[in-house]
Length: 171
Image 1 (tube, rainbow, N blue to C red):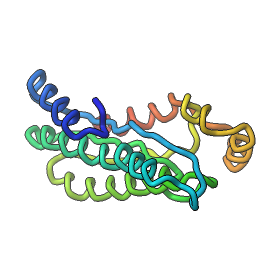
Image 2 (cartoon, rainbow, N blue to C red):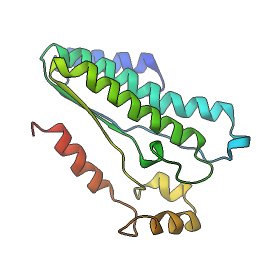
Image 3 (cartoon, one colour):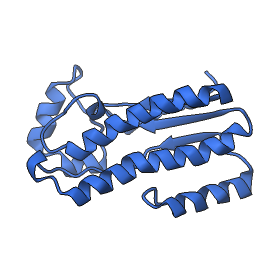
């Protein structure tokens, strides 16, 4: 589905309900990032980033939670970022802001959905070695970023997946 399009989200969750009658686990992992200086950050890119990273997370979570409430059980896991807790470098105006919003949204969801047996958590990793970071992070940025990490390396997708797996479990 296209998480920047509310009708696409509605259609996808209507299909999920039609085919299975339920949604037990939702992982909101869609995300984009554009690098540009704060003073020159293009408004259209800021809006696009917020729409995908935050509004998409909100709408998917609402749709999933409506199905989860019926069964009084569910798990929502949002992929945030350390960039949502602290600035991680220049040019991350929209990305850092959006991930901070995802963290705040997750906290609000957790409070409101707990009474329905639904947990909401966020995983906020540091840099993860993905095609997006390979494209956006220059060699200099990668070196500087990694040096600020105790293990002196980017994380892996499988490390994030392990955290998500735990949060999706009954444990």
